[in-house]
Length: 392
Image (cartoon, rainbow, N blue to C red; front, side, top):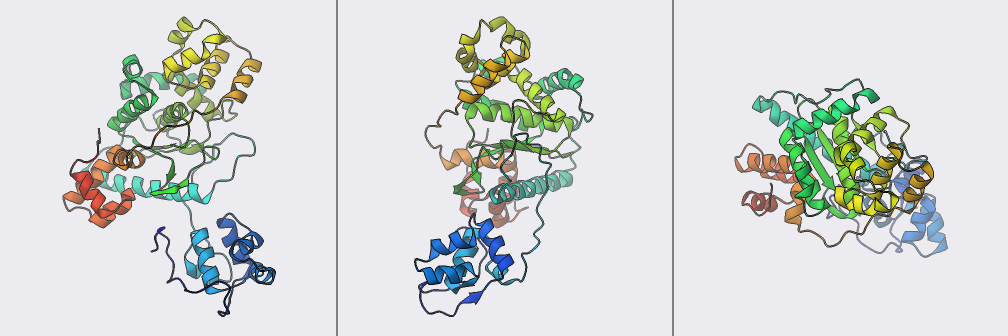
């Protein structure tokens, strides 16, 4: 395994432009590999060579061993795959695509790698719970026949199960603290909450909020929600509650949180999240007009767009006003980079992190396996066990 966690054979040494005997890659595999690398055969050739004759050769599938190794690394595939006659059929974990944005960005390799990692975490945790004799979580799929008429009942049940109170918001100094408080309540109820902005431990492989906002993986004993940490903090809060609504309905799926979804499930999840974060009665008592948009957004720790959506739902503004807010809404820039000791439990689920570390320290799980599950080094697992991370 190389420094990027890629499985490759030993890299050939030497200059790409030397007279090293080239290797031949089939056209189908070349196109597949360059596409996975976000390139075309021609653009890859231009990337690794400055000579026209060499570029033509590379684009035609004749590469030096060093060039082939570069392609394998960029495509994040085993080096040996390049020498197959046809692209391999790689089985990926599947999830319903409930994104509602027109011409949605195709799901990327980064997304599928994240999904694969999260599914592995969920499976491990489910097996752990099974061995411990835990019973199914009662609220998973409790409302398994989605209907708009169920929205109020879902909201009521989520408030009771999660023990949501107005003081959760009022006692939180900012939206980050509010998110932490609500995610902790979800985890205390039995839902794993993962929030990260990059793939596994690779901080340079940043996720795109334009591709997806989050997803839910329903499971009888180990329900899980994922929040794309690349999004604005106020948007991440809405995503959290939206995905939790998915768990209450027992419906897995990846979402982009289109404010005007055509899918019935997505409409219900949006309505549930909106009511949980901006309760109708309280909102109506505070609404004084469109000029209050920012003030109310700050009060409820949500985006201006969520406030505009609630105002539209209650007939306080028209569609044109809402659309103008949607067009001008911009995610605020995040400031500062928290310590890895703070982010490790968040990007792996605090509950999951505590369990894995505990199992590793008790000898029930190998240290290297625990490190692999958390996407950290073995010595980091030991440091976590010594209390260098706040897990609460």
